[in-house]
Length: 334
Image 1 (cartoon, rainbow, N blue to C red):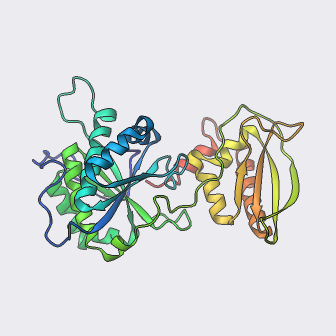
Image 2 (image 1 turned 90 degrees about the vertical axis):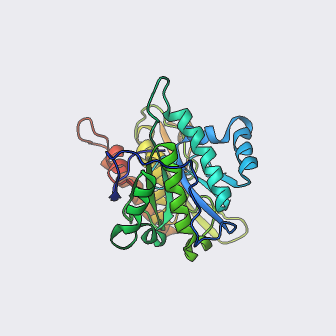
Image 3 (image 1 turned 90 degrees about the horizontal axis):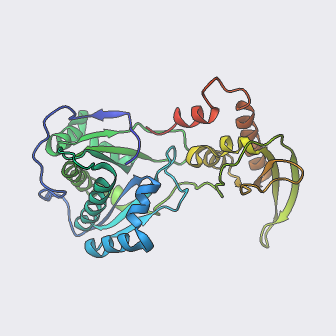
């Protein structure tokens, strides 16, 4: 659920679908199905809303039926390089597979099935897997991933390691196929991951990545920009630095980036906290939004330089191509 991926790929596209059982095939003997494990994958905001349901009724029902725990990253907490939220399902292997089966069934029926469609709809899910665990899925010379493809009938791709984002130690494993094929492939992958001691012990927060600060809405075009400096007392500790940078309203989208990608990158690289004023909240006498940078003097200088660079690079974009498009699409995780 999301956009196409590229990278290490091994596929079964074009072949006749194999006859696969519903989302859970025969258990694999090496694993202990009673051991607590987890699975993380991506979902768009619309899909996340469907999983949660009105007043949280759907997610509560899925948790009750599967006995698994289902957690979602907050709105605007997107997996780096995407505009998709993170879903983490935890419990025993059987509980996780049951919950994932319920989630995928709902998403496929709601977002992929069409009225009058005779063939079973094909969809995809992008799993988040630590770099260190991807080797086990690939296998020597790609033998393991090929066996998963043959056994499930699904198309499976593993994205290359992305060094664009500091601290990103995960890759995306994209599984494409019918609902049964998805379930079969995910089962095989999860059982394999459960054999990896590092994977089992690496369960952490749902969203372990640096989150963007106060993502604003986009406003109408504005003009100009100016700087304003001040200092504030950080709790009862040492005085910290804070700089408010005026950025033209029309350029805020460049600073934020799609799904908060740019502002997340600036925050990660500089170590500064960045807050952007809400739509319509301008520096007096201007149409400049307030971009407040907080941190050490060095962190502020780095963040300020990165913001100025992004804004200046947007002043003369090529025809029909925006700088935001270039910076986000061409550097995103595929």
